[in-house]
Length: 242
Image 1 (cartoon, rainbow, N blue to C red):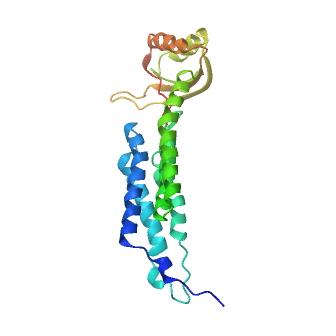
Image 2: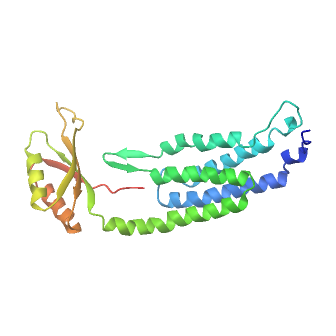
């Protein structure tokens, strides 16, 4: 014989619901604050909204259909709507990932949106300790490990170099010769056509290179040398953003 359904399981008080939503707002805001201070595309308000929205969805999934709990042909699944959040948050995370040439940025922000959604689900389900400790670990990872990562990036020997040259010049050969003379190894090279200026038939060439340096000083010397080559219109060394 099936056990009787306890209707109180599917109900939540207004005070408890308010506490969960406010806590989701606070924990999501903590993680979003680090992204906001770093000037990333998804910042303080975005993380709050994701965390709060996740908490609302899991509250709805658990308690929003309590009036049907006693119906004989109804089976409630508290995790059904919550499961869709985990997969659905991907579209928002994908919007924060950008590719500029050989550099990809926004991966950490996308990951923080995904984890803040899971924290919102945990808070909405009343899993307070798990949500709190997860938030603490995420904030520690973003703040502290970001500083560690910057230390390692200063000693990194791989860099991206973008050079814009006049199509009619012999600049490419001079660039390759100059880099070789400085002991800089090119292990990836991509040549693109840029948009033509008004009144011109063809635009300049954009050369994107991944280079390996022996010393940090080599990059500074390369910038000075390349900028003096006839036909070089612009030079850029974008950093790898997270």
